[in-house]
Amino acid sequence: GHFEAVLVIETIIDKIAGVCGLLPEKVREVNFLPHKKFLATQGLKGGIIPPALVEGNGFIPLWNRLVRESKYWERKAKIDEFNRTNKYRKRGIAITPARYGMIRSGGHGARVDVLADGSLQIATSGTEMGQGLHTKLGQTALGVLNKKLGVNITLDRIKFLNQNTHMYCHGAVTGGSTGSEMTCFAVEEACFKLAPKMAKFKKLAQKMAQEKGKEKYDWGDLCAAGYKGLTPFWKPDFSETGFYRPEIKDILYETYGASVAEVELDVLTGETKPLYANLMFDCAPCLNPAIDMGQIEGAYVMGLGQILLEQRRHCKDTGKLLSVNTWSYKPPTMYDIPEEFHVNIVDMRKESSHNGWDYVMGAISNTVHSLGLFHNAFRKGSRSIKSSRATGEPPVLFSYAVLSALRNAILSTGRTHSGTLKMPIPATPELVSDIIWGEGQTLKGVVADLKEPAGEAPAVTADYQPGKVTTSSSRMGSLMPILFLAVCGPATYFYAKRTKIL
Image (cartoon, rainbow, N blue to C red; front, side, top):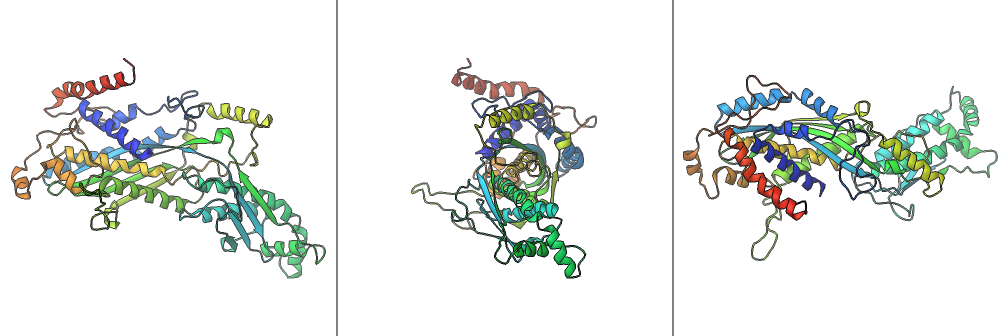
């Protein structure tokens, strides 16, 4: 329900901006969480203590960076000019934030075995389902072993066993977009234990390598030395397990990002074409940039489909599902992907605010561990994986920018007003056409009724300066305060009554 909640609140912000005659970008900016505030939380109660702590918040620098690199205000000015000179096609642009809270449930485990031929087999409680889990696990294992043992193991030497309770029976769920990082923790722990066992055979491996005419031992020599041992009957214990349970201060963390979207609307048919998308996501150091890039792109297109295309239809009499194939149910295709699509994976750790919660929770964790109340099996001091962030579900929030941009395109037609505009989800061509022309309107009537817009949305004026909130220059501007009170006043009153504020 996180995505749906974001759709609701961002729609409210768009409507507030329209009713008040303000730019939506500026309404969002004044409501951002503070970048630096000691022991700041999001102000909600009833959650895990402390409630949704805001530690490592680098969102505002990220937002400013995206505005600058996407040349947002220049694009907005060009779109305003396009809309003034085009009657049958309108464009819209929007920039929206994305914040997604993550929780590490803990309880993932792994087993790593090294065989005599130099191959490794890894069994974990995590399930590979196309998210690139095995690739990340292999990179984690090789990163530890290659560094600790001074060798160069390649990924093709690893065999990943299918996840089942025969191999590992005490595992957590693979879900919530945190399965990869938690199982990587467990594999890293197992390899940290395994490396010292194998390091004992470096001298024997070097001797065997020199007998073969090589200057330095390799991975195969090290494995052969370990299995040769002192006697033919001696076999090494080259197997280890790892288990990840997060410290208290690492259970919760936030992901941040922002996106720019530009769309073009066919006023006659209601069809929407995504033209431009620029996503910026704070991943910290990625476990695998190529995989994470695919995760971000896929999540965005998934959200785009939900916003523009994928409508379920049921029979009013029987309730039977009518959208049962691609003739009646439209998932995104290659033609729905933005013509210009940018994804930026950034590391904002140096620009993030640290408000003290990390130190407070660290002290609590150390106190709890010292009392023996909560055993932490993971070795202390390793931050190689903890600094990475989930990339599965959070980027789906980026797609709201498409709906906001479409909203702006519809408003530029002058046939509806922000105070009364209700955006459908999904915003299919039929529903968008009904918003612009009304239900049951024929194409002949539409063409005859098409005229110049009666008013304009808040526009970039000649004396406009980025960062300064401007009001609309339309004839409706003088009515904005009255419309705002008429729309928001009753809603605020009934909400206060219901929540017993009044």
